[in-house]
Length: 88
Image (tube, rainbow, N blue to C red):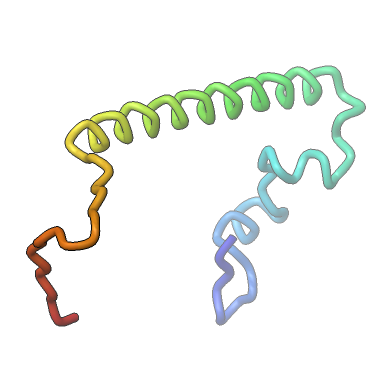
């Protein structure tokens, strides 16, 4: 969280008197004694897992589209090839 260089506090801290409770801070503060916190963390984990699965599926589809126009080039000694060199 970004803090002001003048006050040393974030706008949220100045307004509420405390840092916000975010999903990643629940475990650090020991809030998992609450059944609501446990339910929230379980839902959060399931959401993250689903997001990762969808991201990997999207990556697989993109790679499949890109790779369909590629092929492995095999050259033998004596083959004539065209080499294009570009300057960075």
